[in-house]
Image (tube, rainbow, N blue to C red):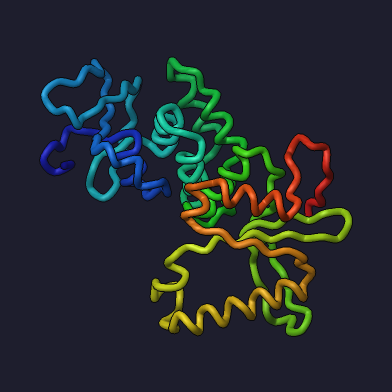
Length: 257
């Protein structure tokens, strides 16, 4: 489409795709294409085209097409989609592009809208989140009011100090309990780049070794979740409650490290 319409500057979730910002693909279910305009946002002719007004449009070239800046793209998406849908974009932007909060705030100053959703996403964005699935999982944790976990905590296996393992989410309690939540994406078992060409049986076996090492390192409870539980939310919430994860406003003290 960029080649057909070289004057278009893609915006919103269309620009997020070009930038490679993680997000749920159901945002594209409506088939809409978003472009930036410095004029009228009125759409005529193509019912699948939507325009976003951008004052002082700054154009970037990504994969040979014109797109809005990362900061502008984040703001436009934050104002149109849910917190859980856009948190992966913010995490990816901080992780991939080391985007500054000031650049996002500068964009906020140019829009005529309540930027509260943007500020909330900035508050919770974390470059340590390794992929969109982990970001979606954390969004569920946040939206249901649970205490925020530590991301990518490193554990050393006491039985073999050369072996280190990073846990997706960790809560450490003053009484010595340590709860780990692991997000299991399907690619973990079928993508050759992630399985290192190993069989599914071997990958599962190594996961069991990993779990044993985490327990030796002090993990008392280990929860696993997946995409289905994240989108359904109920099962994941019940698992967190059963593991004793406190609510953020409960006054319960968690240790930082």
